[in-house]
View 1 (cartoon, rainbow, N blue to C red):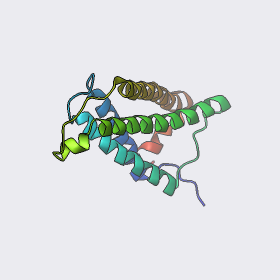
View 2: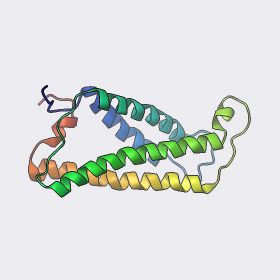
View 3: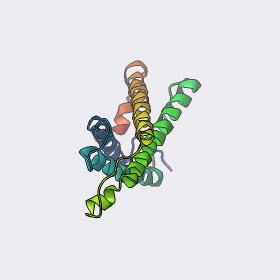
View 4: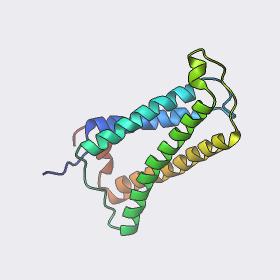
Length: 164
């Protein structure tokens, strides 16, 4: 079996769509989140679908070997950052879904009741997940830049649409 040098095009598309949706949902959120249905919530629901699809594609397609920096500690850090990005994305999606259920948003959308306020703890935990993702995203981007500019290993070509 040959190991590919790049990710499957569908996985690449889902990666970049995840970035767009995640940033869109985060920057369209509102303090307190008390309006019934917002673009933030709609994008969050789309992101959940994309992430589930992404996991399925990730585990059913061949992927390139893990990136190698030549340093075991940096390689492990890169692995942990990727795991953290997946973990915290599902963490905020789960908490966002819990907020929607607790606020009766499905009932509200179906015309069966009003949206209700929810305690701020879940919202604060949801926001913490966003902050964690932003920190991990900065590390992820830093790692990509390190590979591209310092190591000059053309790592970014693995996540592009153009064949190398």
